[in-house]
Length: 136
Length: 136
DNA sequence: TATTGTTATACTCTATAACTATA
DNA sequence: TATAGTTATAGAGTATAACAATA
Image 1: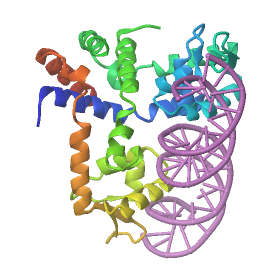
Image 2: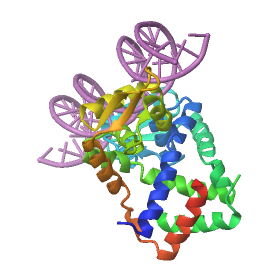
Image 3: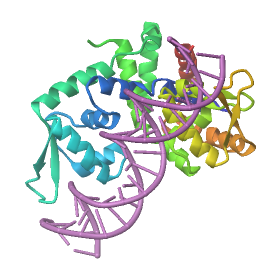
Image 4: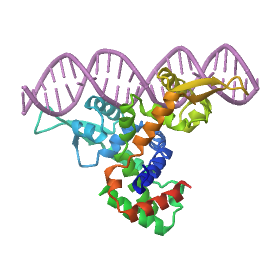
């Protein structure tokens, strides 16, 4: 039952649960929901993405993306554009305001919580190295 | 702007996002929602907890807990009991069935994903050691 | 007066199924 | 026939505000 891999994963999971409120909390500073925050994060500047691919990246049904993008569009952060190749497809692009908000959002989310910030330089480098290997 | 702490946190955050669908996915194997799964996880056997404290642990408003517990109770996993000390309070206790489901749920969630399982024994031990320091 | 749990309300996210316009 | 996006629907989570019972 127990194993080093399970131990490590359970610790990661505990950390995950501890910081679970962080995305909704930071998102609300910008008047956004967690789902809208994740969508915004995935919409990289100058890399328009079809609705369908956003749904896959968000790991949710395509029908949800309609509403999420509706609200981002109503806020003036995102634009729906017709695809020149396939007239069924709509590609999503950040507006100027969307790029600004996204950038501030990412900066805010990337601020390390105190327990991480308190680690030694050596631990931080080791952690970074291992996590890079995990993420590949 | 950049720092080893931010680097490490951003990698952790990326890992969190990657495994974000895991809780709802595993929960649904048991016919539960993510919130119900988190609540069940927090209800330790032989450690009854007031509704209020569960709300705090879930980092949500107390009014939500009413519905979440309603559904767990309807499934026969949890019981509301009067507190002997304070008649305003209701304490939550797992039923026998609740203990069984919780145990299987935790076992399933604790299964390490492939990218973690593939780490070397040395990396796993180092990771475990650092995470223990983070969590305290 | 303050606190616990509940209810009412409104909004968002979620999946499913059915629809449309394309391909 | 199949796919992209939408709509309709129903269920669940979320916060806010107001309430009854109790402290």
